[in-house]
Image (cartoon, rainbow, N blue to C red; front, side):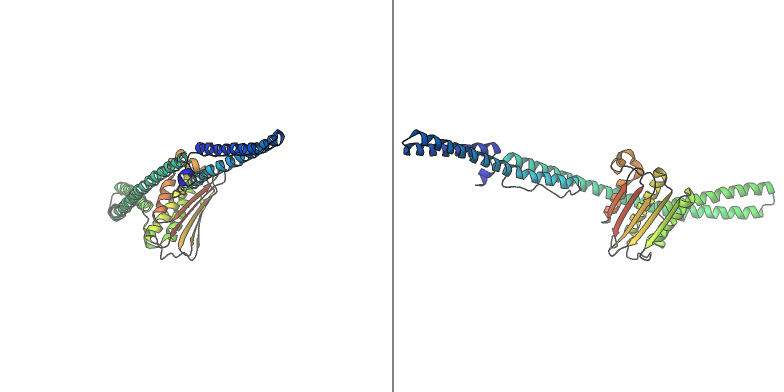
Length: 336
């Protein structure tokens, strides 16, 4: 029975019509043998023909509906994949003919290949992002513990030299050099903080966001606020999870400042039962999220998504032209 169901649609229709035609011929012959007048026979033949046509129509319609039903599985799989469900596959059907079954198998092979490519891309992104984070932390430590300390000592020595110098002109030059050294020291400390803020390790994510907001507001003049819901304490948020949330905030605020020209930015971090959620909202120009990857390659949307995915979190972004942007990231409190 199964080979018949999986026969091509043309063969099914031809076979069904042949059976109906044969049945009609047999019925006509049997009725002709038992009839002795022409008029009743013609009526009977017309009735047989009408029944045969009706049966053929119903059977053809039923076969076409059964044959097209497996195509619904193809449509369902395509819709699921388009919505981001890359695990979805075309389900096999005993009603599918050979050609439809072959199409389903081919689509499944393509989806399997796509899943493998995504897994490789995810692994590569994890390697690149992890290596980048380690390098940033290393460079930040070197800047803070080595170069910054050397510059601080240099500024102190120049200050002492200015105080002890008996020549006013030479002392003024030393004061200028000291000011340059102090500016360089501040820039190095700011660079180290931007690459990997020590406050994130020392005081936690809430304090790090407060400092990010304060420094950005001082630099740009924007109104940037931080709302902390749940007491502001995240003791069970891992360093990896805290780093991910901070990077999302840093990238989102930077994008708003560089591209959106907002009047203000609001960050809101919430402690939930099993996760920590961060929302960044700006009232700037907004943008087309679908075109962001091609028109604004420097926005780092892919990097933010990958960072959040690496710790098992969720990431979303909503934006429309003229309606501002909302970025949401949530990471498990047990993220490692």
